Image (cartoon, rainbow, N blue to C red; front, side, top):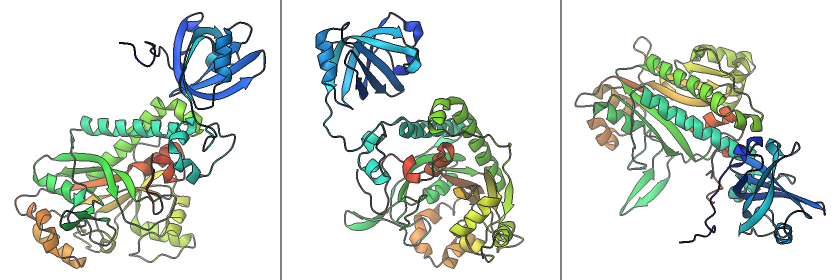
Amino acid sequence: MQGLLKEWRRTHYSKNVNSDLKEKEIIIMGWIHEIRDLGGIIFVLVRDRDGMIQVTAPTKEVDDEIVKQIRNFRKESVVAIKGTVQESGKAPNGVEIIPSEIQILNLANQPLPMDPTEKVKAEIDTRLDSRFLDLRKQNVSSIFKIKSQMLRTVRDFFYNNEFVEINTPKLVASATEGGTELFPITYFEREAFLGQSPQLYKQIMMSSGMDRVFEIAQIFRAEEHDTLRHLNEVVSIDMEASFMDDIDVIKILNNMIQQVLIDIKTNCSEALEILEHEIEIPECNFPIVRYDDAVDIVNSKGVEMEWGEDLSRAGEKALGDTMDGFYFLTEWPSEIKPFYVMPNKEDPTKSHAFDLMYKDLEISSGATRVHQYDLLVEKIAEKGLNPDAFKSYLKAFEYGMPPHAGWGVGADRLTMVLTGTNNIRETVLFPRDRRRLTP
């Protein structure tokens, strides 16, 4: 049976075409990136997943029909080209292809809604409206190659440390932490919500005896932020481990981030070079800053902050100006942390909660959890919530809940750090914010 490609199959991606293939016949497939017709010779840059390859057609040497086809090319059309590899010092990878046969697989409409060559710059909204075209740009696709490697490293790290991967519901009956930052949905005859965190389910899993679990999945926050670091749908990397406390899981997080940095630097050198971003591998243990000291640092920078307040944006910037790279912010006030965070026995105004920061950007939050049923009910009530709304969650604490701790990492924010981007929308394929629900 003859397929659409006339039995052709791609033999090489662009990065694999080099001088070792001189005089060999190959088949490449991709998009028309650029065309330069100089009359006696035509240059065509064909782009695929890995880069560019130059197709060179001297009009007196190649078949007239091929020249005609090339002159009918439209930018961003999809083509398959069979030809012979020749050396060329000025071409990508030092080689070019002299075409012997061409198939136009799909012609692109003109004009294009944006220019993938970036000769005409486009604003972020224009780019996101035509994200499929935007992703054809090497600098944009490089972000997602790095993100893919990061997620692979994270999964490997968890599996190598004997974690079990789980999948928790994203349709939930009540809030994880209370409050109004939830997207309500109609669930048959009743109201439900999109999950803002897998936190309660992670803790229930500790009662199951699985001991160590992780999940990588979407979470949803109905926050009305309109900033460069907030979205309403993001990917969260979550873990929970039994018979551990905040010190233990801080070490796990520290080691995981170290491994991610090493693997990205090792395996994504081409993508990093395209982005003109350098990964620095910090010392083994990230610095630790106590909340009390953070308050002093922020105030010393001229930003007013009282003990017991959360960090304002100005406070984050002040702290980020002082701290370089990754650092942990520990011993947060209990008053501003969720009900499931364990208070300090010696000083209950403080908690066993921590954040992982990168300069002025929060990457992760975690804590030792409350595992005692009575204390948990008390903490729920203290936050002005009704324990009856958490019956299915609390039930797991009545029949043998071990001490446990955990954290969640914002995968998209971590990608911002790894790629040097300052807008979280750059790190999400199809971002969702207050105004954007398509594409």
